[in-house]
Length: 169
Image (cartoon, rainbow, N blue to C red; front, top):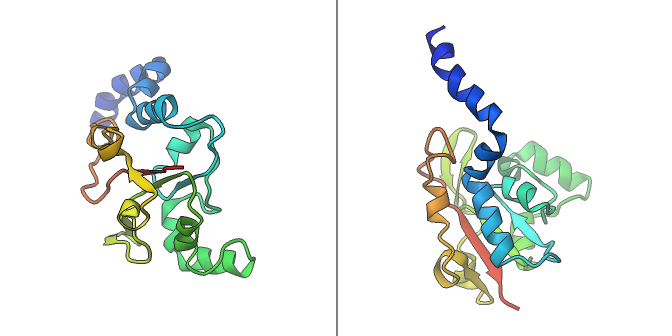
């Protein structure tokens, strides 16, 4: 009862002010910055391996057939989709090799409840694909201010990063 009483007022305030709640949400702010400065309205090739909510705010489809980050590492999901010819072997590396215009990724994932460095693909795209640039360095888009915003997550995930890469044409 005590927890309900303490959380009821802030929750009700959020529901009454949905526009303000959304405008204060870091991924919504990042989507606005991406859209206003980097994304052409025709850019539909966005590979999001994490932070898929950005795609919702940008009103863009994911380049990946899988929409939830952990599904890329769930053997049952991957095997089923491979058997249905929806994805191939090494599907993440293949999508990166296809060079979609924008890649959003995170080198660490929580897989089966354990934080793990992803070793099936290299998330440091600009280190080996020289036609990509990491936005927070060369384009001066500070993704850390969104990643470290207290409104992003109730419980901070120290393993998660927000890496956005854009292909230079």
